[in-house]
Length: 86
Image (cartoon, rainbow, N blue to C red; front, side, top):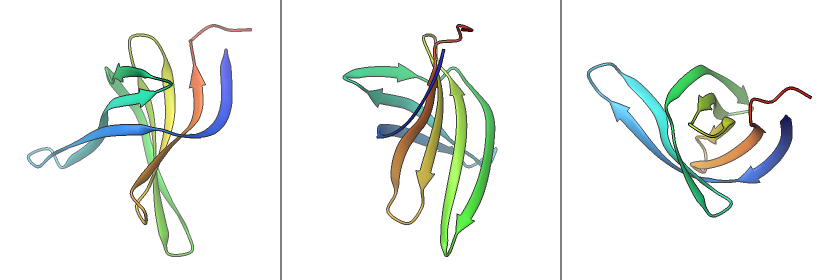
């Protein structure tokens, strides 16, 4: 089931200078830690002068749609799914 929300979340992110890749590595949400197993989709967009990066990531338990605000360096979770279809 997909749940849409806008909740602040803590994220450990990594940057690989050889591959020039930036990605969320671990997500801390609702008192639990989720390790990213796959980044499925990444895009960015601007609102005014603020750049946002959107990542769709997979963990062993859940799928997350994360948004990184480059102005204040915050992260929010916009969507979460357990992979089940209603």
